[in-house]
Image 1: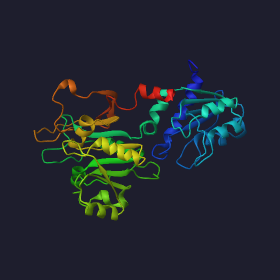
Image 2: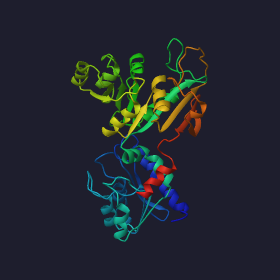
Image 3: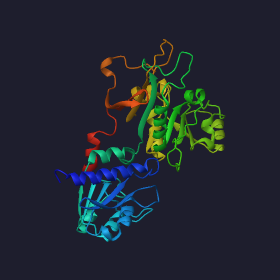
Amino acid sequence: MNGWTKEQIEHMKTALRLARRGWGLASPNPMVGAVVAKGKRVVGTGWHTGPGQPHAEAAALLEAGRKAKGADLYVNLEPCNHYGRTSPCTEAIIRAGIDRVFYGVPDPNSVASGGASTLAEAGIEAQGGLLAEECFNLNLFFFKWILTKTPFVILKTAASLDGKTATSTGQSQWISSKAARNFGHHIRAGVDAVLVGRNTAEKDDPELSARPWGRRKMHRQPWRVVLDPSLKLPLKRKIFDPALGGPTVVVCAQGAAEAKMAKITGLGHKVLVAPTTPAGLISIRGVMEELGREGLQSVLIEPGATLAASALVDEPVVDLAHLFLAPKFIGGVKAPGVIGGLGRPELADAPEAEILKLGRKGPDIHIVMRPQGAFGGAADLERLFQK
């Protein structure tokens, strides 16, 4: 269909607002919202609250009841067509007597896809592409993992206006404002894992937990991942305390002490072995491949300068970056900056990024960027419609 009506657009916007309620709850399933409507009148709404719970379409149809007969259904993702923890949404739609289904983007999961064809065979008009870009952006974690088997990677860091992440004496808490830190916890609440390097884990001793600041109670905490090539991180750090956060994963290099590995796993944590780069650092690309094999769809990197260099310059893996600039100057030649490493010797070789959003979080400047070649562009959206 070329040219959606204002009414159809508004119903899909409502479905998207409902779907966003699943942030931090739906994973590993996508966030989905649904609206059942007769003309302008909404007769049922629903959203997916988590694995094993009713899908958005089923919830919306249940609320609509008999009013669903002859109505239209709006959903941001193509209705599923398989038996999993729940029965197929296509069956519920057909049984309810829905006339038309409008969805945002196709489901790329080969196990669940084919819903539109099944509906069409049952005589139900099914059209995709309504607010496709917005629907795609909502579930980038899910789409990237399904298409590549690697997680969507977010990088978040904060610096002063002169690009310093700490003073020359190592003080870094807190450069950013409380509003910026709260936003960081919002991201943590929605991702599958938070990743740091050993130096950050040892010096800052972070919990790497998500504290949602008054939002509804969370049903899970993200995995806590630390890169520790030689397994030198003391086991007394907060990242190893199971009472303070989610499961802990230590990523080491080949040749790390097997006795230390056994000690870590004996405490109930997981150890992954990743390849190293010619510089002797753990390959961040290799780490993402390992985490993808573990089924993680999204990872938030909270880096020091060395890890930022690996993820943004040396082995670009970042799909979305959040940079907070605090309105202060630190100065000092020895004060660390956002990105360390050797850098690119030629300016022409410097990786570029697209600025997606420029705003404020409290007093801080908030820059949202998509690095060149990252997942989430127009070409990736087009792939969904080509499958």
